Length: 503
Image (cartoon, rainbow, N blue to C red):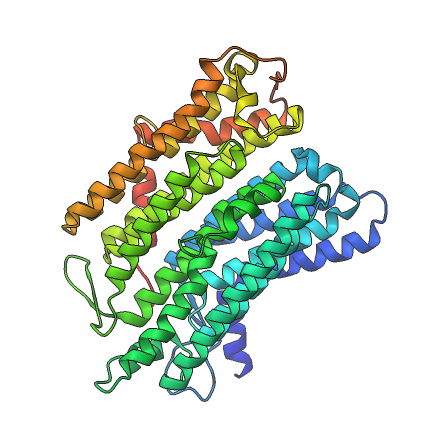
């Protein structure tokens, strides 16, 4: 690769460059500031906002970065387009909120002497997720997943305040190592068959009439298992409840939104780029017929949402309940991908934008209450709606939105998902998803019942969100109501972002 191509490639991945530079600055600042490390969160926040500002102002940026000089095609290892930028924006916004979460978290404050390491690992996750989203080569996909995973393994047990922190980290790394090995095995088989790791080159290879279908299908299932682990899709979800319960609440919130968004962006690009033969006039994806992606996605999504919802019914720990809820939402989002069309893609992106607000909001309030009461048990929320009115109302709004009840934004998210399913004549699947939504109503309403229909107990704490915490609660709550009533701006933004998807 000559210097001109290198400069062009670095220009395309400038947000990643900004994140990398900010990571180095945090490491240096941590080494210099031995005692007073209060400025490190502000350095981290500045780097995130700088990357976010560039992505928003240069949303139409597109092209391929790091094209091999001896390559016969113009396909690079990184595909930069508005679709990828949309998910990167979601990740940076999530990261900004996590800075505020961490600054307010009692768990993180107790390890403030290691705050430099904490934000270094956060930035490692960000960098891994950003490359996951744009990667158009199987090798870069694997490396970016590993960068994300290694950082998140440490963060899951970062505080080391309780045994469950170490347990969460250990389970996470064991499951993660197994899934990475399975995925790498699948990639090696696919490379052995095709002779390439580039997704666009694979698309051309799949047009060949002579394919070893059995071996190819086996490799694709192994690769899907690796990606399914990152998005908490059943049956690869077993790590999620234990890790979500044991990790610091700020990290749990981050994994539930940012890591999941990156995993879905990767899966969408993998299928859209490698297996779509043509997109018809109605926006439907016509895939190569040697592998039935739709049936696989439908089966996995139904299994995921059903297991997630029914497992959540029995949970008394609110973090664990939200973990199973997160698994169920992964199932709903997978249905949007199973539609295999532009309409399904719009539904997924609208869903993620709204899911970010309501899930981060729910975890933030759980964190504030847990810091005050020392408990995450649902029984200790009795009468909380009266002792802590603001947090009670906000948590109610988030839980109602997660259920998908109007006039919250969660209703709009599920509405577009069901519209996409009906348009694709997937009526039976839509009915199953609707029944799952009814099941989820029970465990969300159970929390509301404790907050408003049960008298406060001696263990019920009075929690007030003050200062920056008050602002964060409002910033997350108001859009959930606002977008439930007026959702045109987010719909237009999503449509603009999927106007170009590199292939």
